[in-house]
Length: 452
Image 1 (spheres, rainbow, N blue to C red):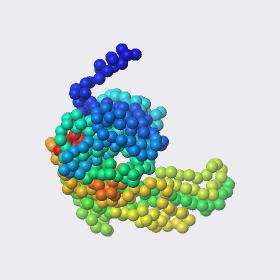
Image 2: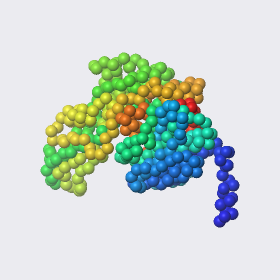
Image 3: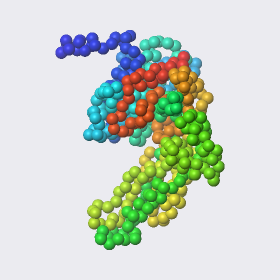
Image 4: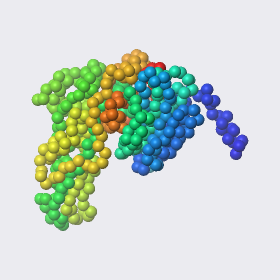
């Protein structure tokens, strides 16, 4: 056994020989192989792995949070001349249907030029890059004007309990001037590379619809059939045109995008978005071209879960549906629920907020901070035709809780959306080692630029 171990150790690169890219790749493979599917999470396994890496490098770190779902925090001290920089990523991943994958979701297998695994994109690639950069900072010994903190938090994919625990019980350990987080992405369009820096995000606002009727035999149609009533309500919500409501991030994003050749069609529609009578028809035209852009303009209401009945020959006495609403930051939950009731216009359909997590609504992060300006500099220097865009993410991250505390948070576009597809949360989630390497190098330049 000892001979085998010595042989394996001989294959590993010496500490001074391992490149930043290889280190990030090694960390990513290790992290993917730690199953942190949420639920239940078991994020402590990943936190303990991170603790082992940090301790071996002499980096101050600690584990904090709920037992079994611990967060990891590490800190490199600077001179304190400037306030800290926070590197943020989460350790949990969404479930994977193994039978639909071409490889084991937790194998970290490299095949056909890609590294496969649940979390390869969301969000263990960012975590691996951040850890690799932190280790490189420690090894290089270069002076820092500010502390650099790495927080790997639990439960981002479900309840955000990890970040909320840290804010409530350990805020001083993670308090920073600004943070680098997930949520951004790079995309090649019109011969240019578009770097989408996420500065704000839409807010999940789940709703429940319920209808009641009289149970009966399936052979006799009833006018109060709750399944039919509920179905009509859901179709109304899905078909309704939501009002257009722009914010500073979406305005600048669309203006910059319309200057690119592939999006020249967008330019004549933008003035129409500024007027109430023409905004919705213009948004509908945009949706026909690109549904992704349409999500920047207004709330979305998507039915996702329906429960009704137990037997095919029995009309049930009730039916229930869940609707995933993503509202704009300048809309309130109460406003959304009231709008849904007006659209459905049926007093027999109860509409109420769904219980559970409620993300905070916040102002977009500033475009004038040292971190944002450093990202602009690094990204523009990385590609001869780079375009840097502030971006509102249609999904949600834990960054909203930090923005609520006054911290500027940015979804950093380190990684290229390869083949213009996004496999986050999907089957055969993957990233190429070259993409990971390039993104890690970009992160190194950003962190050293803003923390030197």
